[in-house]
Image 1 (cartoon, rainbow, N blue to C red):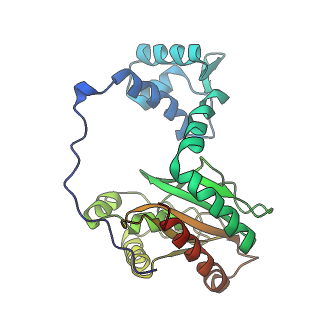
Image 2: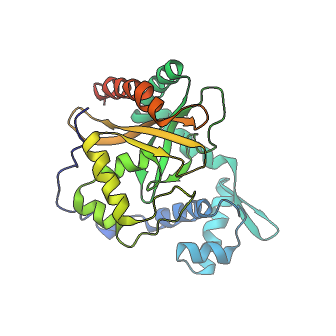
Image 3: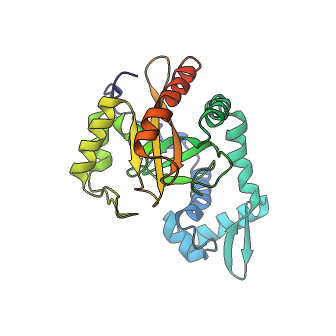
Length: 267
């Protein structure tokens, strides 16, 4: 594939007028999303939710009561948690979204060919959200499943998507951003990350060696539409004990690029 061309710089989208937005829906969704910020503590108090969402305690309580009435949250001894009904929101996207429906069959072919796990993701804020994933029968990482979020700066899918951003947008993304070391090999220096993203842009793929998790190696290419827009990224993930970096490039990159080409005709 030719080098990645960052999307052309466009005038900033001013967005909708505030009067056209439904504030209650916006805040209700913010309450649901607040539970995603700290997975180690699935139970949150009204005060904690109010702080996370920028609401008064009274307002946060009303949103929680409404969501409880609708079946999306439950209360346990004064603390709140999401219910399984929230999964219906994700299922609606997975079943009706055009991108995951097109990607999933290609993942099956890719995994059957390489006998390695594969996933596709899109950039959202700091993270990459997995929209489709398939294992090859052996556990590589718990992050390789639909709906999981991983940091963009230290993952192959994330770096491919960051490399495709217009320069000004990339600089805004990197500005003042913390890059904590998740393993001893994680790139944490912004200048070094900029250099790596420029290299990815030039070569058209990203190869990440044990920066998210020790033992996890990942190779990724962008999913590009027929008009040249980068819509998502797709990867192959393997344990370091199973695949060397050279093996990923020699054996997996051609298959990834074939999948990329197959999808480009459909996107």
